[in-house]
Image 1 (cartoon, helix red, strand yellow):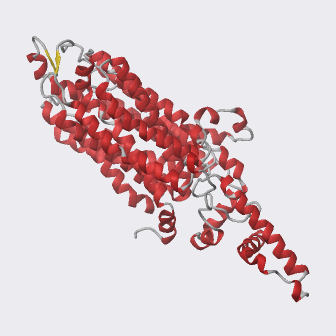
Image 2 (image 1 turned 135 degrees about the vertical axis):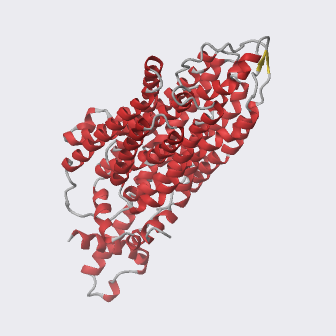
Image 3 (image 1 turned 90 degrees about the horizontal axis):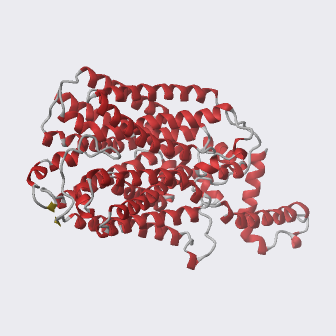
Length: 559
């Protein structure tokens, strides 16, 4: 394997939870990309206007943002995290099954709001849990996690495409003119921003002829194995309510010593000394903002959180605005690309985002997250500059779109790994960064849509260039604050425990106490009764040899 044996051993030991989090993120991608292509058919199903149906976008993305903020609430224990993921992934399958039954736009908006909340919880919890499992090795696994969201986002439009209406799906008088413009309208729809589509006269009354229900039912079935996988993980860890029982320790001290490099032992010991601090991190956004979490925090602590969130505010905002408006930019002057050809641009963009995330999996093992973020941000800046210089070239628009997808693909997971590494995995970075990215994707789409409406299509690339410059500026500030951030003090070493899995420490406490008690007994017998063979260490303590080894190892490390 192209990674070292230590990372490979950790991955094998955490294979089931890792694959489960990846599969849950596939659900996230499946749900995030289906709405755009199917929106006109859903308009027919609900017999609503174009401006009314676009508010379904808003309900989904607003609740996604809200779910991202609240997702940390369910992180307090592993059981809460897995139960939240099970409920969220199951909710997505139910949403897919229920959407064909929604014949009112308000009901559809409520259903999509539930989907948004589920997606937000998935986004925050999956990122948090993978960071907790792998910590300093998390970059490679976060890249894989975000590959799966891209894969799901690519798959759902492909599933929906055969069932989309080629003509107007509401039959009434005078539908011929509107039907001829339907492909253009479908590709021009942008979340929260109907743009200049209001002049199209789409009928709201008549016979509804659409087969899009089959697409949703297929996606519900495809997504169904995901909550089943989460349930199996719950069952394995004995966290299903009807099968309560204490879970066995997932990693013994001996196994940890065998698979941990000498350089990592200090990190694990330090994290073992900070159980309360580690548990206090990664809360929901509102818990993070409580004053008790700020006591004794330095200025750079806040600066790292804010600048990291602002970088993702800009880069995820670029993803949202570019995928939303590149088609509209291409079909207008000066490029005037044919509608059918321009329709490939969003697919090309998302395809290269997915490809870039796949490529980033091995690259992230060889390259530091900070370096990857630097390459990404500079690449975005150069790409927008070249797009502005060659703004009259259709060929370069396609090349630039692919290049932009590649550079933006690994920004979020690399930025998350970098920021968590700066904060030593005890801040609120995951929650703050996920929230900042979600706000950026929503706000910059609204902003760019308004500017294009007032200033023309050329401002689309100018806005991208400005956002790229701001992203680079915020990244430079983050690097500056990283240099200022206080390094962890060596302190007194403690016996190495495993913080890697992110499981509850309460599960290990009874086991640890038993080891310590047996270790004290062994120490008593060996030190005070050794001269008396008849009273030497009894057979009943034979099972506590591991406790004695644990005690001795701790004492040796303490010296």
